[in-house]
Amino acid sequence: PDGAHVAALVIGTGYGGSVAALRLARAGVDVHMIEMGMSWDTAGPDGRIFANTTRPDHRSFWLRTRTKQPLSGFLGFPLDKDVPRYTGILDAEEFGGITVYQGRGVGGGSLVNGGMAVTPRRENFPAVLPSVDADEMYDVYYPRANAALGVGVVDQGWWESAACYQYARVGRKHAERSGFPFVMVPGVYDWDYLEQEAAGTVPASALAGEVLFGNNHGKKSLPKTYLARAAATGRVFVSPLHKVTSVAPAGGGAYTVVMEQLNTGGDVTAVKAVTADKVFFAAGSVGTGKLLTRLKATGVLPGLNGEIGRGWGDNGNVMCGRANHMWDPTGTLQASMPTAGIDNWRAGGAFAEVAPLPTGIETYASFYLSITRNPHRAAFSWDAAAGKVVLDWQTSWKQPSIDAARTIFDRINAKEGTIYRTDLFGAYKIWGDHLTYHPLGGAVLNRATDNYGRLHGHPGLYVIDGSLIPGNTSVNPFVTITALAERNIEKIIATDL
Ligand code: FDA
Image (cartoon, rainbow, N blue to C red):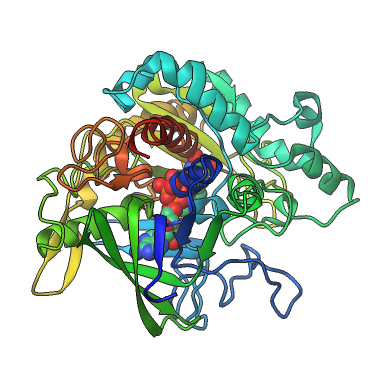
C-alpha cells in the first residue's frame, strides 16, 4: 500500500528477482516484489491461462493492437494480425535497430522462453564474466541454480524414436554429416509430462505448440520453482500490474520507490510510493538498464557511475531456416521445447539451437536460433527531448553474427545440396537479424556495480539480473543469470544485512 515501509523491495520477478526473493526470505527478511506484468494464475474465457502460439489473442502481446511475431511470414502468408490492447505476456519492445522480446508477468522470461537450460562450457566462462571466480561458479552456484530450476534431460531412448523430435534428429543428421559437434541440451520442461503428452494421456502443451505466449502445462517456470518456494516462506509479497518508475534516496539510508498501478488496458490507475531499506533491480537487462539510465540522467540517483546503461549486447542472436529435400521431412508434430544444438563455438563462434517450427503441417524446413560471438555493444541513453531512454544498437551490427552462423549453415547447405529459406523474415530475407530473445548488460558487474552487484554511489541498491552480464553468455542465458544471482545474494546476505 501507499506509504508502506519494506525491508527489501525487488523490482521484477524474473530469474534474478526470484533468486533474491527466495534467499532473502529464507534469511528472515521480508520482501516485497513489484511486477509490471500480470500474475497469470487465472484461466481466460476458453478455460486456459495462456494463448496458443498459433492462435494469438489479447493475452499474447504487451500493450499492442497488432501482433509482432518473431517470424513475419510463412510461405508468403503474413503471420501478424490485430489483437485487443492488453497487458499480455510477450513484449516485443522496439528500439531503433532491434526488437527485444521479453516476458511480462510474475515469472518474467520464464513464462515465455524455450526452457533451454544451458551451462556454458567452462573454457568459455572467462569471456562471459571475467571478474567472477569460475571454480566457485562451477562447483557451487551453477549446480545450485540447476537444481533449484529443476533442470533435466529428455530420455535419450524415447527421444530417438519420438515423432515430435524428428525435426531435431534431422538437425543432428545434417550437423554430423558436415562434421559439427551436436549436443543434447538440458531443459526445464517436465520430460515425463512430455512423454505422457505424446502418449495422449494428459492435455498437450509442448505438443500443442505452446511456448511464446506461455505453457498451460509441463514447463517448470519460476512460479513453480523459486517463486513457489519464496511464497512458502510467508515473507514474500508480490504486487503484479505495478510498474516502478523511480527509486530515490529517502534519508536514513532508505529509498523511496514510486510505482504506477496499471489496469489490463495499460492505463495508470494509481501512483504509490513506499520506502525500502534495500532495493534490488531485477527488471531484466532492458528494464533495469532503462530505469537506471533515466534515474542517473535526471539526477535522481546522482551517485551512479558512467558505466550505467553500457555494455549491452544481444547474445549474438540470429535466426535462419533451411529448406530440406523431400526425403528429409521434419514432421507435422514438433515439440515446442528444443532439446539439442550444434556447437561450433570454438571453430566458428556459433552455438545453434535446433528450433521447432510448430505449424502443424510438414514444412520441410529446419529452423535454428544461433547464439554467436558478436563483439558489438550498445548503450542506453536518456533522450530528454523525447522523454525516453533510447538504445544505440545498429541493425548492421548483426553482420558478425550472420558470418558466424554461416560457418555452420553454408557448410551444411553445401553438403546437403540445400538452400536457405527466404520466406520467414519478409520476402527474400534469409536472416532473422532484427531481434533478440537474450538481452544482456546495461549495468555490468564490476563496472556499474561492484563484483557482487552493489551499485556504486548508493549503498543499499543492488542489480541482480541479466543486466549484470556484459552482452554474451555463449549459450542461452537464464542458467547463468540464475547462478550469478545465487552467488551475489549469498555474499550480500552474509555481509550487508
Ligand atoms: P526477466 O526479463 O526474466 O524478468 C524481468 C521482470 O521485470 C519481467 O517480469 C518484467 O515484466 C519486470 N519489469 C521490467 N521493468 C519493470 C518495472 N519498471 N517495474 C516492475 N517490473 C518490471 N533463455 C534461456 O536460457 N533459454 C531459453 O530457451 C530461452 N528462450 C527464450 C525465448 C524467448 C521467446 C524469450 C523472450 C527469451 C528466452 N530466453 C531463454 C531468455 C531468458 O528468458 C531471459 O534471459 C531471462 O528471462 C532474463 O532474466 P532476468 O531475471 O534478467 O529478467
